[in-house]
Length: 267
Image (cartoon, rainbow, N blue to C red; front, side, top):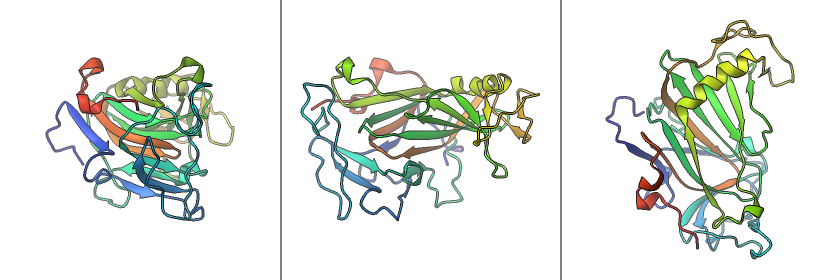
């Protein structure tokens, strides 16, 4: 998608306040759960406008004992609300899943940033990463994952999936806002595939373990795993349930150098 284009130091994939925020994404919801599975733009502080019936917004959790229930420290901005009890069935994805011609983002930046609000439900996002030799893997970060593991799928040509635990700040930490900026160093994720493989921390999805004979290959299925030097990001998928403000990539960890429009301002 961006492989043959000049890539600036910062690339924004999603901004909830832009004119066409989902132009680079496809959407999927669970059609059997019309009241609970939906993707909707609203003002974070007021939760308005309400989604079209029969959809019903979930309540927002309080940040601490002093916070008024269902309000939290929101943003007076339009954000994307992604909600569903069936997490894997409701998501946005880039490149668009409906466009077979754009299957790979091809973005070579080292840092990925997501601005997301914890809405008190399980949440997950995943990315596809590729090494210099073209080996591909999936990194899936989830609030319900307890420890890192490397998982296999029985589907032919499936990519190895690195599951990583993800947590939001605890209410006791007295955060200033319900929003967080999650930052990942993409090259640093590559070694975890080989490390878990060499430690026999391999799961086939049904609880079975496999011996690993070669660090670069999952011997039980002959699936190559990423190793060596990082090449690029191939896709990103954001699952329910969360509120999303922005997704961007950068060459450097910008810290205080981040452009002002990328920062979070509590209400």
